[in-house]
Structures are given as structure tokens and as C-alpha cells.
Image (cartoon, rainbow, N blue to C red; front, side, top):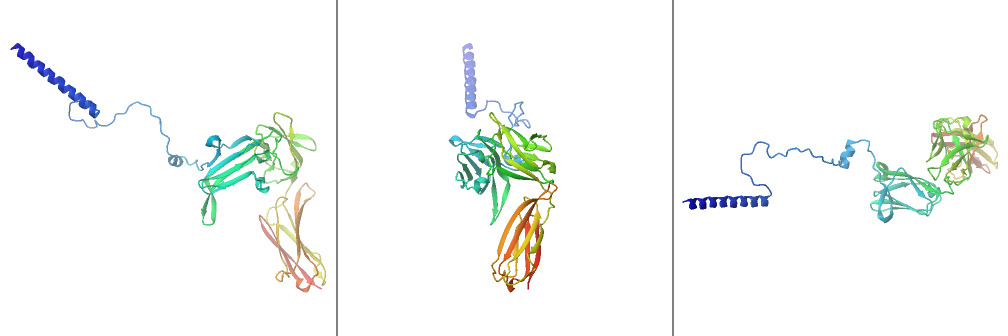
Length: 384
């Protein structure tokens, strides 16, 4: 009897052991621990919060732009480096003269801006191409004269009308350093700088090495001009800036630069003080004679007094114009001193009628135009 009970008890233990092993095997297969079924409490399946630090994800670009309205533009300008790498450009970049550089701007319709003299002299070292996905600018064997601003932007076009996309552009100022050329070379050895009382004036002695020490000097009397950072400041990308020019600043000046070697002198700048009322050209007209004989030579002169750095364009209307009467028209200008330290530009257009005829008698009209507008004047020449 006792043996039968022991056997029965052992058989139950074996069955329990077998059942527990089967449950454990099932839990391994389905990936969850075996547990007895019971009614779930409300909310039991919800994930409980844990005190684990999670690295925040950066928001997408569109979300960041909408969240921060100050991010109005996106730089599309990059420099091509060795082994096909690209580098976004900072506001300034320093390279040694003699190097070549390749810039790219993302987009299918890219416009470039670079030092204007490269266009003036049609420099073959400069290559600009528009490819499918980007614009490319390559400047080979750069020199100190290539120092300046390089920028690009996308054009948005609707038919024949295009405008700059202000949100997609890029710009950098590149210094091409040269120990032999601390100042950016210029095509002339003497320049005129006009001092207008209502706008800043710039003495453009730019350097190729941003760390160079630059000072401003007057030729006569020989002295260094103090740069106080308020009325006169130095901008490494522009030169010396007179914030509020006066007639006391006129004269001849030059710049001196030093950088790990002997100092170098810039070209000379002649500062001329200007004070001319702004507006359409102040124009007068006069004929050599208001009465002429047949066969006479008649000169009609149109004169404009204006700002030294403002160009004037002339147009003429005269009696023999419709019949294609041959006339000679000459335009020229020069600077004059008005005696009080003020400099003015005098521009003239001279119309010459040789061998005066009856068809040449009548009104001679001169139209002078500048950026502010145009002025029309007239005089009459009659036949004796």
C-alpha cells in the first residue's frame, strides 16, 4: 500500500515537471514568459514611463524653418576639395596666390558675381559653366588681383522675366595672399575719390593678407591719419571709410601695409570734395550765333554742371534730322574747381553744322539725362 502511494506521488511530480517544461518551451517560442491567465486590469497594456535619458532628434528642415523665421536664406555655395569632397564656405577664405579654386552652386539656373576686372580683361583663367544640377566656377592660377567677393544665386524665371531667389544664394570673400603684393593690384597708379557730404567715401586700398597691419597717410603735410573707428574706420574688404566726409578731408593720401616683412605702399588717392545739388541735370544751351549765312559753320553747345562721378547722356533733335542732314556731335567732360574746395564735373555736347543751308534753320533741342532724370533745353538758329 505504501509502495503504491509513493509510485502515485512520483507520477504526479513527473507530470508537473513535464507540464512546466512544455510551458517554458512555449514561452521561448512566442517570446513572452509563461504566466497564468487572469483578467487584465484597465490600462495594464500601456507602457509605463521609465527614467531613461533619450537624445532628442533634430527636427526636419521644414519644421526648423517654420519654427525659426530668421532662417530666411539657404547657402548653396560650396568649394570642391581634393578627392571629390565638398566644403561649405565661411564669410571669408584665405588661399595662396598660384592656387586654383573650383566653386559650385546647387541649382539649374545659377548666376555668378566675381571681381569685375576678370570680365573687363576677359581673363581666360576664369571658366563658368551651367550643368544639370549645379553651376560651376573655376579660377586657375589665382593672383593677388583676384582677391574679392565671389557669390552666386538662383534665378527664378517666368517666361523672359527673371528675378533673384533671395532664399537660395551664397557668398564668400576670398583673399589670395601674396608676400610680394600686400595690396590688391589696380590698373592705375592714381585714383580719384569723391567726398560727398551725404554719403560715406571709401579709399579702396584693399589687402591680400587679412592679418596685415594697414595705416592711412596724408602726403602733404606728411602725417599718419588717425583711424578712430567712428569717423574713419578700416574695413579689410573695402579699405578706409570716411563715414562723414568734409572739405577738411580733401587732399592726396596713400596706405601703408606691414606683414612679416618690409612695409609696402599703395597707389595714391586724390580726395576731392563735392557739393552739388542732386536732381536732373542743370543744363544750358547756346549757339555760336543765332543768325547764320549760307555756308557758315554753326556750333551749338549743351552744357551740364553736376556731380563728378555721375555720367550724363546727351540726345539731340535738330531741323535737318529727318532729311538725314550730316552733322558732327562730340561729347566730353572735365573736372573744375569752384574756388571753395568744391569740385564739379562739367559735361558738354557740341553739335556742329558745316556749310549752313536753309534747311538747317530752326530749333536745336538738347536732352541731357542722368540717374535722377532729364532736362530739355533749346535754342533757335535763323538764316540771314
